[in-house]
Amino acid sequence: MREWWLLVGLLCIPLLAVYLHIPPPQLSPALLTWRSAGAFFTFRSNNIFYRETYGAVGSSDVVILLHGFPTSSLDWYKIWEPLNRRFNRVIALDFLGFGFSDKPRPHRYSIFEQASVVEALVSHLGLTEQRVNLLSHDYGDTVALELLYRSDHNRTGHLTINSLCLSNGGIFPETHHPRFLQKLLKDSSFLSPVLTRLTNYMVFSKGLGDVFGPYTQPTDAEFLDMWTGVRFNDGNLVMDSILQFINQRDEHRDRWVGALTSTFIPVHMIYGPLDPVNPHPQFIFLYQ
Figure: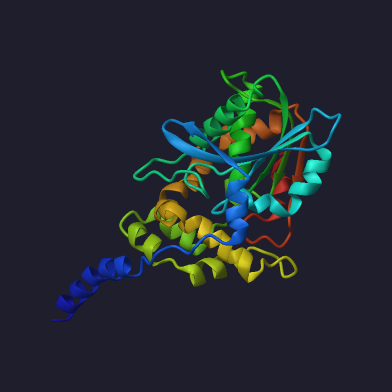
């Protein structure tokens, strides 16, 4: 009898998950403004959102901003104007599966594909011959390292990288500590479709808030904008597929860490010491 009730309970979980898949929040004025200031280009039949502004007069410097997981290009809004005063062109995109970009499913998301998205954007903007500076965060760090590998190995279509700035990314897999939910989503093929539907704003904001320092916590409005960006076009339903990047970091460690340790391109690192996911002591591995 107990086994029968257990079976019924297991069958009810997917039904409950479907029930809890409530409509996404409406776009806030901040998100509407951000989207209206951007544009789209097509990558392999998918629409990719990007934003570009012209800034410093008399400079030809270009910076491309690569955001983290699970958010979007909106991550950069607080430093956009300072960057605009320093660089002639400031460019950011939403990776495939993030923000306002398309979120195809089923789809095998990969760091390699995201690097190709960046290369396609650079080509679309006519910057193929331009030396560019990369500023990346978290997930974007690994995309940046793949771009660095392609550049240093002179791969077809590669960027010409002038400098690279990495911030709080799991560059070294052995010192990366994903959150419990991330581990479940990346490894639990049976549970993942249920968990992506069960995840709500409260779970999201609590989990994301834990990786911020005590003096840099986002406001409620900022948390809601992040969550709205995830829910836009059912992006929460592709999180398990995107999280395979953690496994890809393990599999391709030699390629990406090797690119970092062997490059002659100037590299700068910015790390918040209180980050529980990507702690800064990983630097000790850099020159070993």
